[in-house]
Picture 1 (cartoon, rainbow, N blue to C red):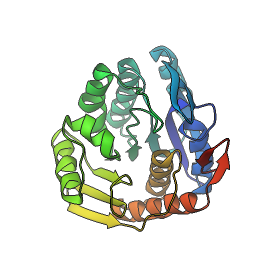
Picture 2 (spheres, one colour):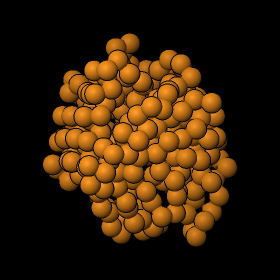
Picture 3 (cartoon, rainbow, N blue to C red):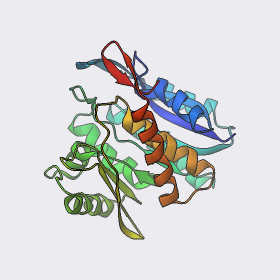
Amino acid sequence: MPLVLSIGATEPWNAAGLGLDIRALAACGARALTIVCGVTAQDRGGLCGAGAIAPDLIAAQLRAIDEAPLGAVRIGALIDRASVEAVAAWLERREADGRRVPVAYDPVLGPTGGGAFADRTTLAAIVERLVPLVDLIAPNLAEIARLTESAMPDSADAMAHAGASLRARGARAVLVTGGHLADDPTDVRVSDDGTRTFVGSRIAGTLRGTGCLLTCALAAEFARGADLDAAIVYARAFVRDRFANAIDVAGMRVAY
């Protein structure tokens, strides 16, 4: 069973964040290790509060798993610039030591229900320090707009353009997720191999934590040696299954 490290923040309902990552990675056949970089308070109305873990404690957690034979890394919400810097520095050290593994990044900038984790300083650090170090970043429409300081894409062509813009800022590969498009949900991958569009049919309803589910599945597939597009196909199918089989908890549709 491959080991996948998930780096991010907690959320009380475990409908998103590290609590969901543990279950999602297990469902994808991987064992989860976790690094807590932040604590958030969320409910179905959105963000109630959030706080970052001290960077020296983030670094200590990363040292504690240093001997783990990681197959991949999944990164989620990072709440302040210091957290971004701590994670980026760790990735750089591993690369310098010849221990680099594939990294899937869900740039969670705020919960779907409302509110924001990342301020402008944190956002700048994400683009400057973290984006060039990951193998795949998977922003949704609102996130790609903030990351590229542009209008929110409203079509596959606009998504491809935004993805290319983020690639120009150092991203190795971008998967712009279009679940909130007016038409059928469409994702657009932009990489060295050009652009590929993935189209699916819409399932009625909502689901918390879709970005977590997607990037956990991507990381699990990367850990098994899958190539980029094969991992995307698997991850999209995994999210679709969880969407179709979601359960209701206190008025929220959640994966588990």
